[in-house]
Image (cartoon, rainbow, N blue to C red; front, top):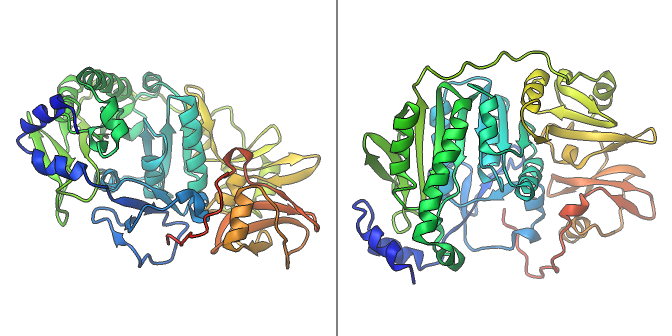
Length: 454
């Protein structure tokens, strides 16, 4: 069932129960989601909580997420339970920090980025990066749906971040790996090989060292993989620490069970192994930058972005925001994810594909609200008439179809489902123009047996 070389190596890892692990990998894995606490304010009573994540829950079965309007509105994100532990590590290393700057270096498709966005809401900026353009677009979509507004999305090679010396308080690297932790999936098993695992280890070294200059002295890098391979996990952590001048950070596991504390050459990591925990394979460690020889951070000067009075006047009735962060790009009104000068500083050095929340744009002297605004948790309640859609109507809306609107005036109307915004329509009376993004349109057949996840 599994490659012989993999089994042989696993048998030699003293802290792993190879028989129990492989037996667990032969069974179906758990399904879990992480709730957006800024969109879903109701208690979750139908599902068991993930012990190490306050907003994480196990589902009783694997649903068709595409069939759930709440998934499209950013109420939750389907995320593997073990990987949610990155949130607990972040909470511990970020405790007490103010106006925090965070980089999620390998952000797509968005599990950890949406998690980090929620964790620093109102207390800083998240830069969510992805080097591959198509995956960066998916990342931007998920950040938009999450709706917290404190995140910019960039598309850059890790080496580009050396242009931001000492800029970030925390860098998260969920490194591309050999994927042994996902061996419940036959595709992951088929793609595994010893040379590929070796290649992953070398690539991880390059990624970390390329991004390391962007971490400020005293800052922390959180490194994770979804593999069991020591060469990609603790051995790489030891190499990083020696090469870069870093100290291992101990994570408090009090009240949490099942994780394996891995110690190697005075560095520490934490392993999640199926059979011991309810989740997939995962490894995580944190390193604090102790070297003071890093190139000093550059002073952030006034940038090219300018506050727009016209944009602020248009945005003020629609969204709760600092007017100083509202700018115009052509006819588009944008609420920046952070201070204008900080965004300018980053934009002069990196390729940004999402600057924050697009509020809308002016077309023929009319203001057209953007889908970003519909997804934003900062939108002003009562700014628009609301139509509460049934499940069937919500699915039609997500398919860019038509249904009969009743009880709402003509003009812009916000479509809600179970109290959560889905998007805008322009009600023309006899029909409406659908504001849901064309590229996100769902095409699945109707699920007759759909049952609510939350």
